[in-house]
Length: 278
Image 1 (cartoon, rainbow, N blue to C red):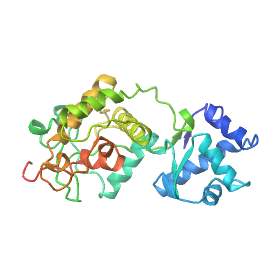
Image 2 (image 1 turned 90 degrees about the vertical axis):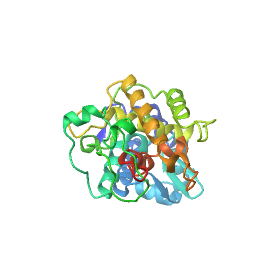
Image 3 (image 1 turned 135 degrees about the vertical axis):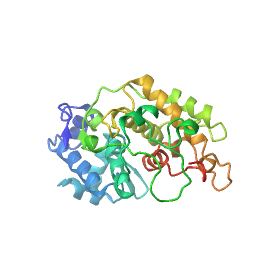
Image 4 (image 1 turned 90 degrees about the horizontal axis):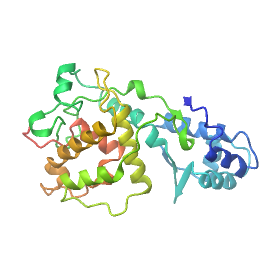
């Protein structure tokens, strides 16, 4: 686990220290929680306050501890569920690696020249899909080349008490929303874009700029190439009769759904290709 040098002195960490009565073990509680997320392969838990206390090995009052973690922005609670804030965003590559492993590993390697033809996106039907795979939700192996995420699978902690900072360009949320609306005007437009959906979009943006292709090259190297990647991604999604709702089988797709880690991975892997389009 890589810890950014300023994690201990970050304002959120220092806030947690103060809320817990100047407990200088506070950074260790957060690290233990993040390690638990990695071990359990999730960042959302059906967990009482006493459970959170146990995971972090806090020795004081469990309710006081949870309140401090919420106030300092490390966790949030909704009913019986606790969400570890920021873990999904900063471990997008690790989550993608888990998804790939759950599908039996990565498919055949694509030659470097093929990757150039598909603009660094998974290969499927380049002329019709702008270099992205398509697929009906068959629940099996994806039709496209999956990213090489092993080099980015480490859990790191840094900015905002989360993973190490990569000095990446900020996610242009409105520009990406506009691209979604351009290619998928039949789907609901997100009139409110904040919270978990905004975090998920930021995580997918980070993935495009940090994940590696099989040839070791990144999918995007700067803001312009990352925006172009998302333009192709939404154009690709728009060709799916299932995702667009054109086949009448499902009408639950929207931008929030597309940028969730597990859904995003399935789309990129080609799970929603139209039958007979290969």
